[in-house]
Image (cartoon, rainbow, N blue to C red):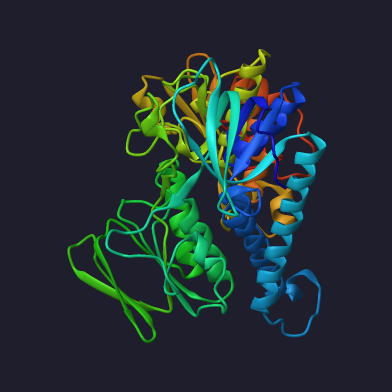
Length: 476
């Protein structure tokens, strides 16, 4: 949908149609502001919906179903030998994306958000209190869009190893979602959320998977015990995990690529694979958006803001993956969009607290966390008291045949305040919501010990987890 509004001055124009951008535009409109959204893609949704969170989780769900089918007889179901139809796996993934992109188009119309499909670029500081964004439309023409406030939400791109570029063999999260055939072997470089999720997917589908990580542990942002447990379980699944590696080199050949590296002991290693996934982080998409015409001075491409997400250029805000010092997570960008919309509209808003941001990794088993790790809490000077509860003691986990993992609670020994919760196990990414609420309300271990949890549920493991801080877990 296009819009011709040469004489219109919007209250707010959002540049970027991902979760941060479209959430901000919708909420601004709900507050009664005249809002517009500029996006360079042919479909709204950004990386998260089109090439990231949503398609990846669709594949992960298919992998979970596939794992259950392979052991159907365990659950009393006799089926013929299941076969993986990769073409249909991709088709379902694309269908999920399509339904939600159409949903976004509907939401734009419902909320009367003007949408411009094109590349937006700032033209300079505000003139008479009005900012201008020049939009290069799909047909090559340009459209000047004016607004009292500008919100930059242009997202990020996958980083590539120096000296290489993505192609049919060396992949990023974008290319791997489009491969025509299921590879028999895959080397994953990087063990953050993206790397370990794709490793989980393709291992479930039968590929030989190798992970290379330059740091001494997998999922390095997580609590040390979570990393240790995922490493144990990945090795149990037959995933070859290599830590503290360096000097990675990729040599393409007729069979895919030969990946060479130096291991933790200084010995050269190599692995042949059909495909190589590079998952070493994301870079902010801020080039050529006109920052040089403003007072905004990016730091390694990232835009720095105050607590209300306003930049050093008055009236211009930044949200999502382009913001320095913030985790590059869709739900962080979305919340930032809500905060900015409220701020611009003069409504109640609450600044984002870094210690209240949940992190979720949708592997098998799932990982979720919020707040301080045990090490971080000690480094901040807290007298720490920790409790752990294994899922082996949870009835619903037994029903799900998902006993691996545990709940770990980090608390302040003096006052009992919950400082962090770290989970690896079934439905971890769902039940972490309770823990975010607990931290947001500054709940204590004692208060959560007397909060009723339904039985039988996986969430019930949290009750025992909080109780374990006092050495009073019932079911272990």
